[in-house]
Length: 191
Ligand code: NI
Image (cartoon, rainbow, N blue to C red; front, side):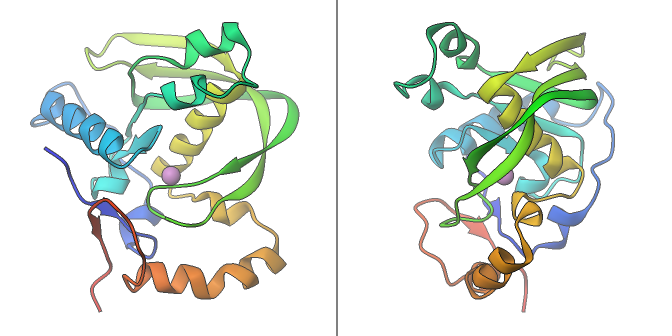
């Protein structure tokens, strides 16, 4: 089932998600629905707060980035496939900071460069609640950092300069008022 994507301005996007346990009601179906919603809206990642659940869960399939010519072959392989992150903790961020143009399904029509460190060490549970600790770099790390921010109540626009924020203010207000053109279903703040 495709779920509506929560738009910028909804309070749930600003909350810290709660940890979940393996008996979280309907977890497997929720994960399937999140992937379905992500694919339907052409996203590479989707975090639970974006479908109005304040929990520590996000899904990723960065396959579209594997189509980009500039991406190295060995990195392409890592980008493919579904990944589920439950109760993740980024233990460490390292490496050089690099810029990448980010976007977000909750903030349609806005794409801006964000600087992040290139490498992360992350601990998480997969959909079967097996624990993993992994070191990840490159584009996959980037997508994880963005989704991880969502479960911390952080949005990529928070990193922009005060000037950039001022320039985008009207656009962001319009998104929160539902004045936006998107091809997928969204949920907007109540007036
Ligand atoms: Ni996002």
